[in-house]
Image (cartoon, rainbow over all chains, first blue to last red; front, top):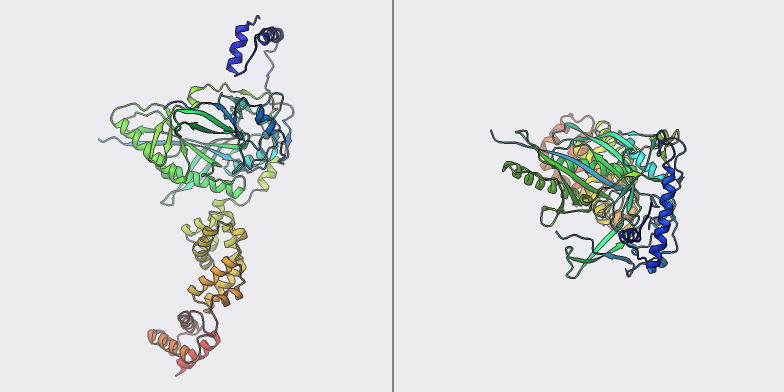
Length: 96
Length: 489
Ligand SMILES: [Zn+2]
C-alpha cells in the first residue's frame, strides 16, 4: 500500500509532530513497509482466533510502593512550551 | 387532570483509591499541594516504549468495595483503551474497563425518612486511571476565551474506581443519601478518603423526567457537583427545569450540563465527551485481569464490620435511638470510640450523648480523628462516672473535658486545673444548699420518711441535686452525712 508524503504530513499534523521534507520522504517509505507487513498478516486464517482471549495467564501485579522518578526536569525542558512547572498546551476550552 | 412528573436518576461516582502509588506506575499518589509535574514518569506521561504494570492493591480495594456493595466480582476481566484526544491524558487514551468490568450487579440499601428501606442497584464497578489537571489561562482571567492551558500530570494515573448505579433513584434527597452511604463505606473500608471537596470522590448524575401522560424527556448528564448539598440542589434545579419544559410541550435535549454552585443553576456545556467517539478496544499492553483462587475469600475475610451493620447493632444491642446510632456509626473511628466507652463501663446513652455533643465539638475544632483524640475512651468513661456519682456537675465536667482535650491533661490534673476542688463547698455553706434542695423536694422527703425508698435511690437523687448545685465542689462523703442528718431531723 503506497503512502504519500501528504499522508505523512496529515498524520504528523494530527499527532502534533513537526517533520522536515526529508523526514516526510523517508517516513512515507517506512510506513509503506510497515503496512505491507501487516498486509501479509491478512493472509493468515484467524477467523477462529479470539485476539483478546481471557484465557491464559493474567497480567502481573505490582506491590503498592511509591518510587520517585528522577527525570521530570529533563522532560519539562523538552516540552515545546512550558510555564514554570507546567506543560503549556494550546487553548482547549471551547467557546460557550 | 394535571400532569405529574417523576424524576429518574442514576449516578456515576469516581472514587480515588487510597493507594500510595499510581495504577500502572510507581509514581506517588500524594499530589495535593505538590509542585506540578512532580509525580510523573515515562509511563504516566505516555512516553513511547513504556508498559503499564498493574498495582495489586488497587484491585484489592476495588474488590473489597464491590463485595461490600453485594456485587458479583468476576475472576477474569480485562482493561480497555478509551481513546480521546485531550491534553489531560498524555497517552491520548485512558486505560479503563468496558465490556467486562471487575464487578456487576450489586446494591446499596437506603433508609428513607419514614424508616422504610429502599435498594438502589449498582450496575457496575470498574477500575480506571485518573486524568491530569488543566488550568486555563485567559487574558482576562475567565475560562471562556482562554489563551492557552497549563497541564499538571501529578494526578494522571491515580487509580479510580467507577461505581455506576442503576437509574433507581427517584429524588434529590435519595441521591444525596446514596452518595453519603457510599462515601461512608469507602471511608470505613479505608479504600479512599472520600473527600468531595478535594475531588477524591466525584459525582456525575444522569437525570431525566417521566411525565404522567407517557412522555419521557431525554437525560441530562450533570457534572461539577462538589458536595452533598450541591448534588441535592443541582438535581432539584434540574427536575424543575426539565419538568417545566415538558409541561410546556417542549422537548428536553440530551446534553451535558455543569452545575454552577454560586449561581444555583445548571448550564449547558459542550464537553469533550460529546465531541468524541471513544473507539474502545482491548488494551494490548495488559493481559487479562485475573483474580487468583482464594483472592475473593481473602478479601471477604478482611472485611470490617460495615457501617450499616454497625448502625443496626448500636440500635439493637445498645438500644440507641436511630438518629444517634446514625451519628455514632457515621465514622468508623467514632463508632470504635463509642464502643470502647461502653466496654469500659459507660452507659450507652450517656456515652452517646457526650460523644455527639462534646467530643464532636472538639473534634470539629481540631479536625482530628477519634482514634488519636487526646481523651481516651477509658478517661471519658471515668469522667462520666464522676458526673453520675455527683462528684462533678455536668458543667464542670465539660470544662474538665475541654482541658483534657485541649491541653492533654489527665483527669485528676484537669479537675484541679478547672478549679473544681472537691470539698471547697462544705460546712455551713453546704448545709445551706442542702436545706434549699430539701425545701424544693418536699415530696421526695415524704417518700423517704415513709420508708418507700427501700433501695436508697431517692437519697441518691437528692445527693445528686446537692452536688450539682455545688458545681461538684463538695465532698460526696460530707454531702451524704449532712443530708442524712437533715433527713433524720
Ligand atoms: Zn508515573
